[in-house]
Image (cartoon, rainbow, N blue to C red; front, side, top):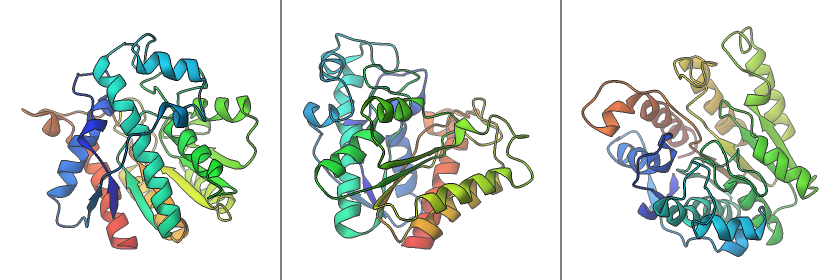
Length: 284
């Protein structure tokens, strides 16, 4: 499993959301797991001009210069410094997946709420849309499928699609349909996922947000059981893994008692660990 990670994509300041520093915890956790076959790949930070494929150029400039609030509602310099690397990870992973016809991982979060000229809800730039448009501009894809299994509606992705009049992206977002455990019972979630996968079968590239926050115990999710989470990842990998595919971390907010940040975030790490194990078991 190719993992596109650099330490620079981590913001060291503590934030209300763990997304700014979660990549370091996740990659360290995977390195210690003998059931995960991982190859860390470096990459170049993405230029502001590439980020501007999906965003207003002045918005991009102002956020990177700390003149405008980022998705955390701050003007944190270390968050700004990390953004070309978080989006760069998605862009590099998408390019590699297409050129090598593989499924790969970008250990990133904080994308799908970012709109054309506005960051929100811990999302500064929409790396999903930047990666999709960058691959389209490079003539590497005609159609891209986004299966967003974060617990929350990907409003920023839809906003950018409408703003730029994009009709070549299949966007399926769990948060538009399911809000609690009762919504997802009796096969309803599985039926939605099946339809979403079918709609993406003829896409050239799949971007899959394998969010941890839909889990039943997540304070900001509470939708899917542990078994459903595992079945979700298995279905995507088994049915779409033959296509170029990039999966990322998206949300996750469960905490428990512990002396270290990794110990406190163990419920989140366990869910991401299971996704990485399934990737290794199914796709190598």
